[in-house]
Image (cartoon, rainbow, N blue to C red; front, side, top):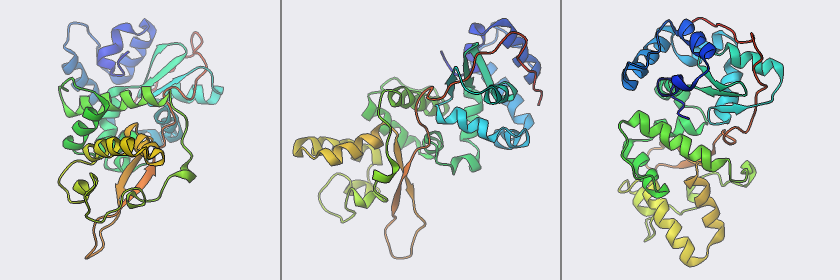
Length: 277
C-alpha cells in the first residue's frame, strides 16, 4: 500500500478517514485527483509548521524516531504508551488496526526541512543527494521506471531500500570504516572511485564499477562494504573543507533498522484520538 494518504485513503477504515479529515480540516474525496489531494494535505501540514517542531511541541519526537527507524511502518505489538503516542501523532495513518504508518506527505515535508536533512537517517541522506546521484543509485538497483517528480523518486527509493533492509542482517557500527578513503584510496590512480574524487561521475555509478571490479578480484571484504552502501545501511557525509586538501568523506551508519522492525499494539474500538493541529 502507498504511504501517501492521497493514494491510500480509500483503503482506510471509515473511522480512520473521519479522524484524519477532522484533524487536517480537509475532505478526502475520490473525485479529486491524487496530485491535488497531496498538495491539499501538504498545505494542511504546512499551516501547522515544521513536522519536527510540531512533534517536539507535542512531546512526540521519540515517536517520530520509532517510525523512521522502521522506514515509516510499525506493526503490533509494542507498549501501550508507544501505541498511545502513535495515536496522538498527527502525521500517522492506520491502514489496519495493527499497522501504523507515517504519511508520505509528512515525509515530503521532512525531506525539505533543513534540520531533518542533517540527521543520520537514510531518508535524510536521500533527500540531501542531488537528482544525478539518486538516478545513479536507482540504475544500480535496477529501478528503471521514470519518476513523475523528485519527491516521488526520494520516497520510492527509500521504500525500495526499506523492503530490502528487512531481508538483510543488521550492521555492526563498530565494524564500519570511518572514512571513504579507508575503503577506496583517494590517490588519483586508475580505479573507478577516482572519478568520484575528481567530481566527474556520481558516487553510486563509481560504486557500481567498484562492485564489478571487486567481484573479478574476489575481494569479499570490499564487496561487503559496497553492499552496505548499495542497500543504504551506510552513506557518505562530506567533512568540512580544509584549505588545500581534497574533500574528505565520513561513512555514517543509517539509523533505520528495517521495515516494520518495531511494532505497535492493535488499536481497540474507541481508542483512536483526535489530535488537532
